[in-house]
Image: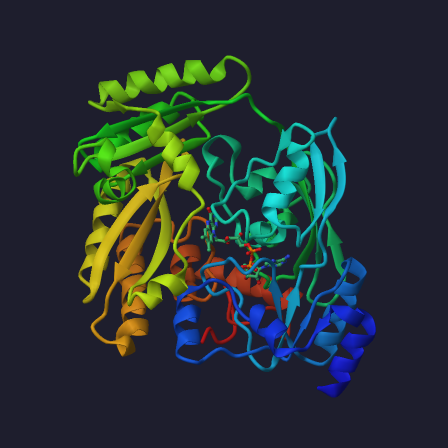
Length: 467
Ligand SMILES: Cc1cc2nc3c(=O)[nH]c(=O)nc-3n(C[C@H](O)[C@H](O)[C@H](O)COP(=O)(O)OP(=O)(O)OC[C@H]3O[C@@H](n4cnc5c(N)ncnc54)[C@H](O)[C@@H]3O)c2cc1C
């Protein structure tokens, strides 16, 4: 160990973090299960945190760790919610915090390149200064990194028009588990075999460390048109969204809350039990009003009632504000979110099956959902559950039972089991159902080819012990 640390120190200088506070701060992500374990006094620290300053140092760090057979845990902002970062005393956390900043901005070609550790909000503000946007606004934009977005296949709140992260990544650079450097070609499209960028888009730190990301930008649109409608039930609201999307309208924000979530967010704006649908329309000059008129026609035809636009203002003002797990646990409440996806025909059944399944778990006090990412052929459902187990000792078991209930119900309907948070540790046992046995074999073979000793983020996504 002392050899490892002195070798890392020689490469990193100040970028080697050894003190307890620095290691504790970077030991995990924002997984509820880790928060519960931490409360119980089970927080393990990594041997050290390595924070390389550039790609060359990153490559050296990975080579040293590999030569010593030491586990490596890539970490960005630590906002992941599925246990993708969880240190053990025999691991080195590799933080991207110093591999950050704007490297280049090409307004003519709408391209911007960032170090992977750049904070998402800072990256967006830097391109907005030039009248441009990345267009990826996860709720966690202020606490996540652009490399983390890539590693988890993140989705932003504007995805219905602007796409998910895989739609805005133009090219990327990554340090592979043997320390070599992969860079995809800077081209708007390629027909040159499978797209290798996809190994890192959703790689969750298991295929290497993303060090640089180039985004394909958009000009900042004109201020948009905000609209809200409410419906008697969730299924009718879903049907209205399908009909808005089908002919090709693409409002960036399309969010439908079920009755209980609508009441939670907008209770003075609608009858109890009704479901609020929120739209933001944007686009080239002239598009937003046309699109809003089309959405109004569809929503009215489905019996929707138009709500005052301050409903959307309320959503915008509070969209990134959520209580922390720590605050909830302090009140004796455990909670989490689970996002899945399916086609339009199965969405209503998926909604009912998952909320019913979670509700059967003893201690559960709420199982609710909204949809926030729509596609031509389907949409996501984002479930939130809350439970108040009778005893503190029942928290972890209750949490696991909620996940088990939700995943089993979603899998039984053939739904996509992870829309945008990733697999991490929490969903690992359902990966075979998602990929199929042959898919899992392919992914394992790729992993073994890149990382034969399985040192890169073991226990996450694939391979290793998830505990
Ligand atoms: C309040 C809140 C709201 C959220 N809202 C959204 C949302 O709207 N949309 C959404 O998609 N997600 C959301 N998330 C989840 C989370 O923010 C995303 O998964 C985000 O992309 C993680 O980025 P990060 O930099 O924090 O990554 P981390 O949490 O540090 O890491 C996440 C995973 O990626 C790996 N990783 C990180 N950086 C790299 C890298 N450079 N190279 C290789 N692997 C790496 C880690 O090993 C880990 O497996 C939310 C989370 C919270 C807490």
